[in-house]
Length: 123
Image 1: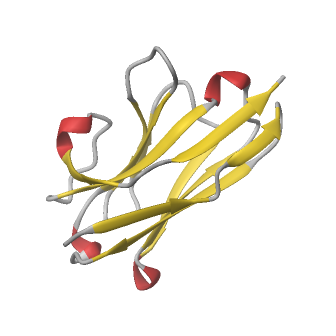
Image 2 (image 1 turned 180 degrees about the horizontal axis):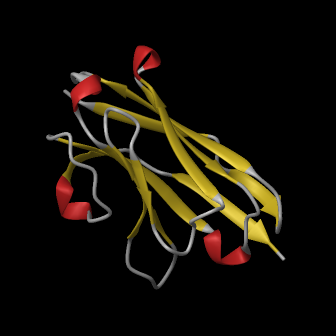
């Protein structure tokens, strides 16, 4: 059974930083794409960053230059470093894992999801 557990959410002021982590268990982690999504009340879930097993990442336009996705295959962990946060970045952030090593920003790509961690950015 695949499990994804996120951590690192919290409350910060605009301009601040947070680092999210997601630990994956029960899967051959190294060969699968991972991603971060977010959802805020009244809005659809959106892809924030996707990362292949070799570390190649892609980002939503709204976070380019501010967010950085990375992964440590030895620790079965994927990270999302979020800098220069804006109030619009607030929401629940979800980690996701796919069945193939092809990262996208579309949620249909991913079969496994974490429970989410809350991020609140105040102005």
